Picture 1 (cartoon, one colour):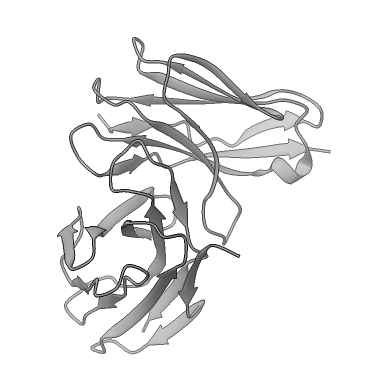
Picture 2: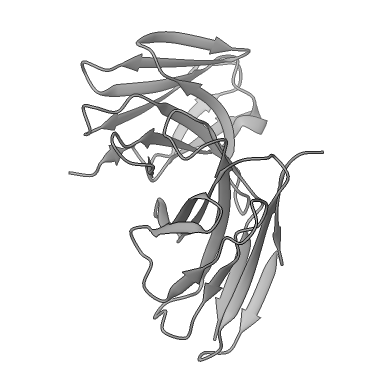
Amino acid sequence: QKEVEQNSGPLSVPEGAIASLNCTYSDRGSQSFFWYRQYSGKSPELIMSIYSNGDKEDGRFTAQLNKASQYVSLLIRDSQPSDSATYLCAVAKSGTYKYIFGTGTRLKVLA
Amino acid sequence: DGGITQSPKYLFRKEGQNVTLSCEQNLNHDAMYWYRQDPGQGLRLIYYSQIVNDFQKGDIAEGYSVSREKKESFPLTVTSAQKNPTAFYLCASSKQGRGDYEQYFGPGTRLTVT
């Protein structure tokens, strides 16, 4: 079992729709979770961090965390073609200084 | 502007040559990291440093070396011992080397070895 799992996609959504990206993790002791956006050929860009159970909103983005289910998700409202990218989920591994990254979900927003 | 710079953006080398990738940050971050990204794979940790003059091996350190003589700088040397060096190399930093701090990435260096 991978430490951080994401569906590779592609996830295709029409412009204006809500895109829902999911991530599961295996380390039950993890406390810190991060979402990054990576455009093709570019480096990852931090979108949001989340540390507590529940929802955290920032503009069109909402991160959701459920530690009991070991599940973190990212919702993108009013999706735009410019949101088309690969979204990486990262988890800070408990007891270490390491961040474990998923392989990413490719999102395509269709105009 | 605060940020992380990596140079060069593209690097081409012949097999058997060592090559050093530069990473500089002016965010006053204590922790710095090197990752490697291959197509279709997640980021894999090569080395990390929590403080000046100290660094630890990550998951794939073989064939790589680093130094951390200054807080701002964390260069990575890809040696001839690295079997598959062609990849996208990413440097990152965080305020401290603890998982509750956000990690920020530089623009990356794409290394091609032939």
